[in-house]
Length: 284
Image (cartoon, rainbow, N blue to C red):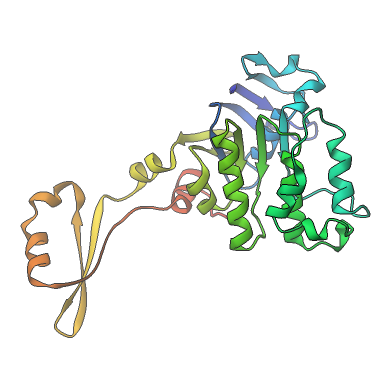
């Protein structure tokens, strides 16, 4: 769906490039995570890919056609959900949605989406009366109201309670199920783990590593099994190498002769990988 080759960009007042040769591809029907600490170029990359920034070097191909060759027709195919919801606050939610629907040829059944997201009953209220969570949910409806082929989402569940975050994530999965493609940027690694087929970590204006969440956890994790067991009145722990576990007599002896309380592999988390790859402590 996208092929990004050696993307470079410098803001006019900056002494150095924000993007320093970024390359990656996004397959059709894939949820692709673009991750990294603030200031490494994630938002700049997205702004270029949605044609908000144009003075870049390198190449971006969308459906095998250079992005520079597309006119305004490109906007009919994409949906964008910015991190900070931008609405007409003096208009009602319904008026906001109807205004934006008129800009597009294809229009989704937004009433059904608003009902699913729990904001339909408030559709006649002005948006400045909405809570932050309600604005985030309305923002998602706006991103998909033109039935896009590609969704660009920046922190789509930030500030939502678990129930509403679950609905948004289910809708994103359904979008992919029916052939949609998603570029997702978020600091919520649980969302990444649950949603993304592949992720790219950015550091200092470049792609540091790309792989599936599972492969990254295998690569960067410890292949150990931690066993907690009871010995008399106390609790003890033992650690075993997973690769040699099948022939480790100490492990089998422990399982046979002790009361095992818990047993789990030492799998690293995407939060740990984020810090390891980017070299930066993660902030929300």
